Image: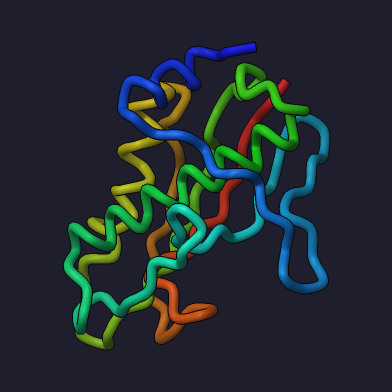
Length: 154
């Protein structure tokens, strides 16, 4: 079944990655009632980690692309939680983004906009969400961005 979300992804030349298994003692998502809580998804594209530190060796634009990659991974986990039917997604409730950045870097919101903008572009008002954008001194594997999310599904 192809959902409107899948069609919008195709129009942008994007595909969702396969939902990955966790590398430690946790699960990739927890569904409780009509909410899916997705564990932090690190920035990766085509199986390769997107690494770097904002304010040092990575631009805001590159950070936003890394956040966009996290958003695609979040949606892949939601798809897995919905038994492969992303059409069951009703709302992006909240995103919490962590940006690997230097002490003086203050554009974390601009970086996480990469994920927020993609959610709204793909989902319209359904993609509008509450959000936090937080600096981190380091992230796992040296990735540039990690984002977790809460989603409403049917």
